[in-house]
Length: 485
Image 1: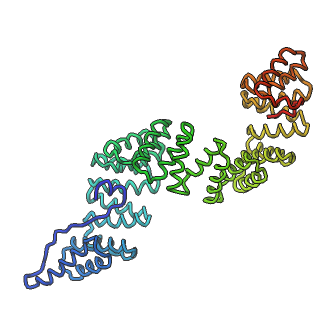
Image 2: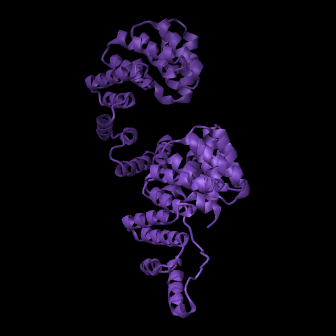
Image 3: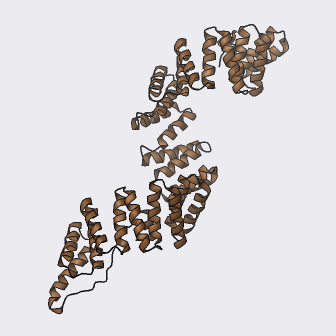
């Protein structure tokens, strides 16, 4: 077995023993029988039952040195472990240690058994014993490091991997394992260095490329992460997380390729996080039907996913399915009350003109998150609709204090001022909104009305002309409240 395989999994030993017959010439037939059984005992290609029978036969015949008996018990324990007889396997590993406690492999055999049972404490004790016998065995440091990492002893794990590398600088698995420990500890740069060592020695190692991509992404180097994710997808085309990561990073650069990669990940693993990523991307691209189908699948995979219900509610609302949206928001709130969900449900109620329910939700959102802009805007709008102008002004002003570049808040506060006949204040708010975004036909038209009320007839004519050029439909009504965004 290669060193890389030994460190990536738990050690399995194929023992080649120097057979030292102790039989007289007259017992030659017996010797041949024992020797034949021993060959079967150590042949991992033989059926397990046959191997265990032959190992037991050799032990029963006796005449072996203690060290030879230990090796046979070790082989027998490994065979029983393969067969699923865990109790019998442990008995034989114990017998191997009793037969020759100075033989490193017996401790490693039992350590591997304990590790397979997730009994990390006992596995660590046996690795310690093995290292007392052979303190220069790099593979044992690798495996002990894996155990330490499993119980959260990352610093000790890193020390073991470092020791393995010092003993064998070509031990790529130790570099890879140490990188994993570094990443778990938040030490991104040394993880990148270790994974680069692995890739330099093993250019075809797709998993190392994927892990380094993860490290680059965490280090704020998305372009390098993209390169590694692409390499990982090429080298490990059946590894869904690589396609998922590549698709996730491509969503802003190339949405269509991102969808292709996310779709590949979903084909490989129908429960991949790529399914959610694709749904969110569809939502951002206004492909609401596609988003809805994906969120249906996300929820089918996990009916306790509160965020999936929230996002599906958004898709439903965008499609005009307000009752369905509210149902999804209800479920999301039942699972995990959140300000965003209350705010979204409040807006759905607002669109349905259910002002009392809308205000209740906006208030609930603001209790959880007092600076939630969606809830503040929603509550201000609900108050405007129910003619509570002073309350509406307070909330729009609060939004502007929190977000001085909020185009919608200036526009809507301008409408409140206009309805209160505060035309100069309305004019100022419309102008501020247009400073931030000049091509708003509704705002231009409303400013033209405010300008007319304040005697700025030339400016009013110009704004009206510009508004109608951008969108002729804005003149459908003359009241400010009929043209809201």
